[in-house]
Figure (cartoon, rainbow, N blue to C red):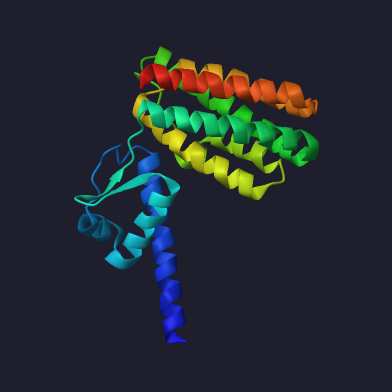
Length: 231
């Protein structure tokens, strides 16, 4: 009984550590090619190296960390070819997701997706005003709790009714979030992407499959055109 409890405690510690490290990476606190020093990170998180190593292994599987035998783990750096590979996979998966969403999305899915776009519109307007008034010098990407962009996309994927498909796409989007932080996507880029989000939502509301697929594919292509320019 004690062994089972200990294993459960280690699993919970590993999951908590994974989430904390992932948040640091996606918030830009741990930059691409950053070398993870296990002893320092274990001290920061207040855990032993055993659950920490499990957390690092999970993040390697997810694609946020890379194992290098001589130096342990480093945060993933995305080459232009990595960006292209992600683009090709996302194009296929998200086309499938929006097609299914047009068939299966509930009224609640659509309402939640629309509400996230409203919040994103408000956030972009606030940042735009702050930049114009000199309070900000450049766009500041939101933390995970206020990432209305990701919330919108995730709601669309969930509307497909396929949780496995949703998980695959969200893992790829986490890699994209890391690219956005690294490459310095601008407020103007985000405003253009937001316009495309509204077109996706409009097509979904109409249950117009071909229109929705075209809107999603145009959006993904435009996103990656920006990445290719900045890479």
